[in-house]
Amino acid sequence: MERVTTAQTSVPDHSALRSAVSGARAIVDVGVVVAVLVATNLIAHFTGSWAALLAVPLSAVLLIGIARHRGLDWHELGLGREHWRSGAKYAAAAVFVVAAVIVIGALLPVTRGLFLNDRYATFSTAIIASMVIIPLQTVIPEELAFRGALHGTLSRAMHFRWVVVTGSLLFGFWHIASSLGLTSGNAGLTKLLGAGALAQFLGIAGAVLATAFAGWVFTWLRSRSGSLIAPIALHWCLNGAGALAAAFAWQLLR
Image (tube, rainbow, N blue to C red; front, side, top):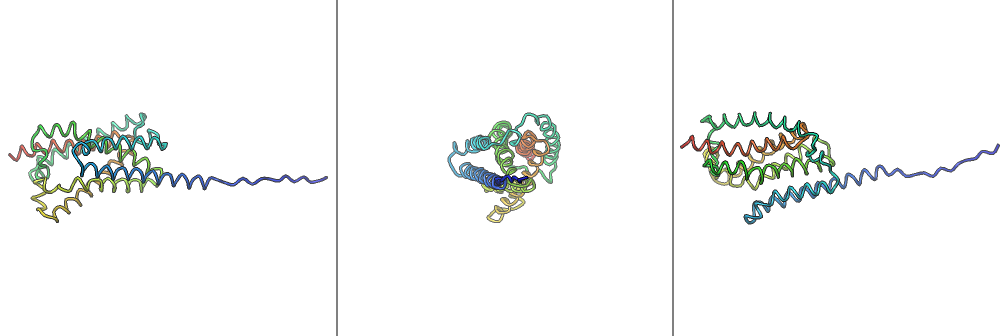
């Protein structure tokens, strides 16, 4: 019997190539998001009033649009409807704890001075800031940008541990420009750190460390709940309730 040999055409395995291309695209996406964030930060703090006012909200919308265009779904952006309930539960718990700490801090004389922010010396300015300006210009856009678009793109490019570290550090660096006049605009910090270049440096360093830690907490909430609702709520509580506490502290001082 004649043996028939069948020639098999070898098919090259393209899985490694596809994986490499996918990884490179993910890194490029991260670079695009970071570049937009850097440009937004510069525009928001070193340009005219209208550009500064609109830069962060418009950038957040742009970044979500870019992320969606690059294939990220609503779940990856923390905006999936299936996690709204868990997000609300974590939000309620986080706000309760942080609001209690803020109230106690404003009431205690030993910590009250840290709340004396000159921008919120009256209740009228504090209320407008906490209910309108802070949510629309700061809290919601920043969470969409950092815990939404940035977190989603980082998650496609690296291990979760490095997603947390990178996102938290970038969130801390994001606050360098906004903390340039931190000590001079806060009576309590000026009294504690003094004035001059060293005080300014310490104020900036402290702000970066504090906001990087806050970014870590926001990321933890986003990951545990699967939703941006929880970090948005906590972020507002820190900023919005902090503004109201500042006005309250000023009233107690007077």
